[in-house]
Length: 74
Image (cartoon, rainbow, N blue to C red; front, side, top):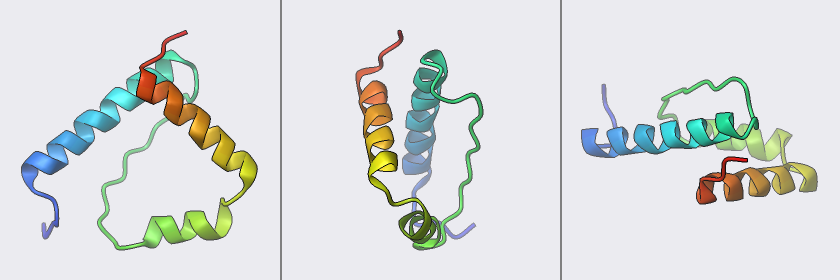
């Protein structure tokens, strides 16, 4: 596998992602999570910019981000 991430960086990324998933599940934000590890430059971000850019989506993302940052469990 040709990766721009080191093993340590990749492990840290998945550790952080797993913590975020636990917090979101505990707060009933999402029921299902899919992890996709694919290093293709700009592919997912381009899709999001073209198809998901709205004030409502931004507010929801910001709200979930605050929950995860604070580790809140209601």
